[in-house]
Length: 115
Image (cartoon, rainbow, N blue to C red; front, side, top):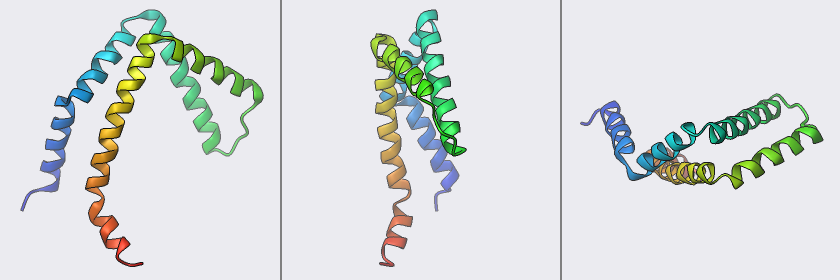
């Protein structure tokens, strides 16, 4: 009987060797090696984190914060390297979501049979 952890490590290795991950890694390194792109990307991530934290704590998001986030998103969308990075990230996320659906299938079948 295969060990689940061994299978998980094999899956991790397959993800690292996938075209989706390799594309994401190149896109990430491109952004990190460009000072302007890096700062814009980090501002975007910081803004995202701040807003998510406020939402999780049930705090209201001010008009100023919404406007700041809108401007940061606009800058990100205009920056070709960051846009490419986000596309690559989305591609890998799709694969990971599909893998997650496969992994959780036994639970879905078990609980789904109860209805």
